[in-house]
Length: 416
Image 1 (cartoon, rainbow, N blue to C red):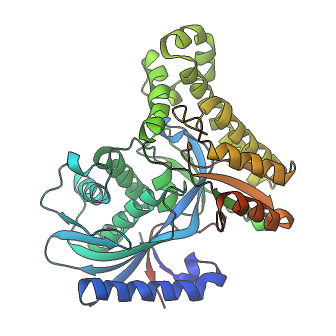
Image 2 (cartoon, one colour):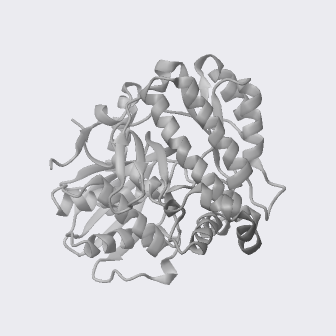
Image 3 (cartoon, rainbow, N blue to C red):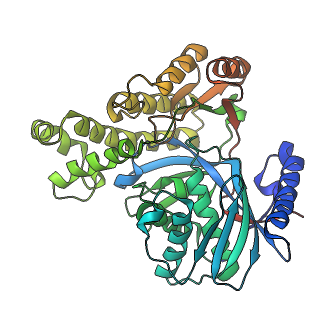
C-alpha cells in the first residue's frame, strides 16, 4: 500500500491555494517560535466532516452518508528522541504525553491529552509502532460546529504516527477505529464511528457499520454546485457545555431497547420487532426510547435512498430524503434542543429561518450530534446571498459557512 501524501492542490480548492500555503508557512514560524527551533519537519492534515444522512445511527451499527470538508487541522511535525508526544495547538496549552505510560487516566477525561494518549494506546493495542514527536497544530474546524474538530484531531494524531513510525501503511479505516477508541475509552464520550471514518477516508462516503471491525465503505463522486446548490453549515451559537448527558442518552436508550431482545444494538433487529412489542417497550423504557429506535430504522433506509438518488442523478429525490432526515430528527430522535433547557432552542430558530428563506426549495436539517451548534442546508445558488444575510442577521456575521467537499482524508502534505 502506497502512503497517502498530498499536495495543497489535491486537498484545497484552487481559490484557497495561496492562502493555504501562507497558512502552512505561518504554522512553521509558530513552531519555531514556540519550540525555539525548527529542523527537519513534515506537514500533516486531517479534515472536518459533515454528516449528510444517518443522524445518530453509527453507534448502533447503522448506515451513514457523510463527507470530509475543506476545513481542517494541520500540523508541523518534528521527530524527537524523548519518547514523548508534545503537541502545542494554537490557542491552547501544550500537551505532553509520556509514551511509557499509556493507561487511561480519569483526570484527563474530556481533554486533548486524553485523545493523544488514547490514539497512542490504540496503536500499541493493535501492535503498531509509536515514537516521540513534537508538533504545532492550527485548525479552522470550528469547535462546536458539528464538523467534528475532535475527530479531526484524533485522525491527525493517528496519521502522524502512521507516517512517522509505520511507513504510512495503516489504513484509513483502522486509523478511524483507533481514533474512536481514544474518544470512547480515554476521552469518555460514547461516540459512534462516523466522525472519525469520514475524516480519515475523505470525500463523499457511504458507510455501513454492521460490522464495525470491517465497515463497508463506498465512495460516491458528486458535485453539488453542478446541480445549482451550495452546501452550507450555519453556526447557531449554541453552547455545547454540559450536553454530554443529552448526547449519551441517545445511544443508551437505543441500546436499552436492543437489550430487551437480548441484542447488542438495534442493527440486529428490525422495525417490525419494535412495532410488535411497542406497548411493552413503552412501559419499560418510555416513549422517547421507542421513538428514537423507530428513527434509527427509517434513517438507515434513507441513507440507501440518498446514495441511490446521487448515483442516478435524481437530485430532487436526494433533497427530499435530506428533508425527511431532518424531520425525523426533530420529531422522533429529538436532538434539536435539550429538554433540560427549553428556553434555548437556537437550532429550532435556525431551521425556521432556513425554511422560510428557502421557500420549499433546497433542504435543511440538524447537523451532527444536535442539541446546540449547527444546522446543515443545501441552498440554491440564486438564494445563497439572501440565505447568508438572513442567518448572519440573527446569529452574527460569518455564521453561515459555505463548504466544499474535500476528496482526501487524513494525509501527509507536501507544499511543492
